[in-house]
Image (tube, one colour):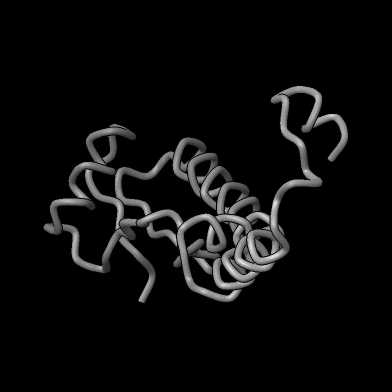
Length: 113
């Protein structure tokens, strides 16, 4: 607090107690309320985002190393709430499957049923 006071020329002795109480209440409300920052921290701390990244990279390596023109992939297990994920479907004519197939230069990429 002393550094903050010196840095911004604030005299903390003149700030009323109710200002501290109000600031503390706002912080508590934001900690318990659902918001994007809290959701992002949860995804990072429980490592859902890291597990998703690892799982997706393993899928990409599998698709690249597969010599078949039609590749069947396992469903992703870890889906972080902060990332809107598009999962391939079991139907090859799904537009997202077609994008996947075009990117990896395969005839079809489908999800295992």
